[in-house]
Length: 209
Image 1: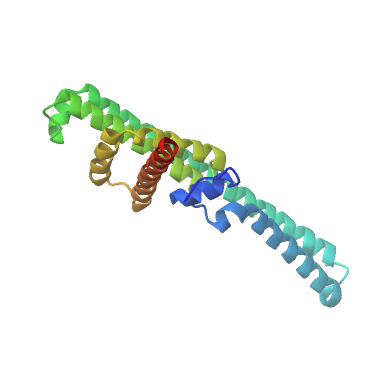
Image 2: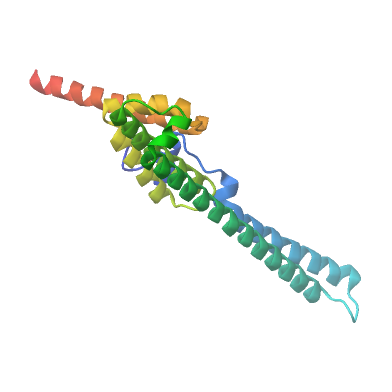
C-alpha cells in the first residue's frame, strides 16, 4: 500500500479501501452504447424483414434512440434527486449536531453529560468522520471526482497523524454507527501512518550510522 507518484487518484483511493465499481464509472457510456447497438440492430432487422411503406429501418432506429434519450433523462433526474438527498442528509446531521452542542439540556437526553472538554473533542471527531463519510458516499455514487475524494481522505489522514485523535476516532466509530467501509478506511489510514513513521525512523537510524 505504498504511495508512489505513478498511481492515479482512483488507485490511491482503492489502496485506502475506497473503490467505485466499474458500472458506476462507465455507466453512462455503457447505456449509450447499448442504445446505439439496439437502434442499429433493430433498424437493420426491420430493413431486412419488416420494411414497408409505413415502417422502415431508419424510423425504428430513430424511435429507439428517442426512447433511449427519454430513459437517460429520467435516470439523470433520479440521480440528481438522489444526490440532493445526500446533501440534505448531511445538512440535517450537521444542524442536529450543532443543536446538541448548543443545548446543554439536550445532551442529557443521550447521556452526554460530564466533562465539557471531552464532549467537544468527541463532537469534533464525529464531524471529521462525517466529512469522511460524505466523501465516501459522493465518490461511490459518481458525484465526486477521484481527485476531490483523495483530498478528503488525505485531510482525514492529517487529523489521524495525532495519536489522541486516532484514539478518540476509534471509540466514535463504534458509537456513531458508521459503516464497515469507514472503519476499514480508518484502519488503512492508521496503518499507513504507522508504516510511514517506521520508514522515516529507519532512514534516520541509517543516516546516523
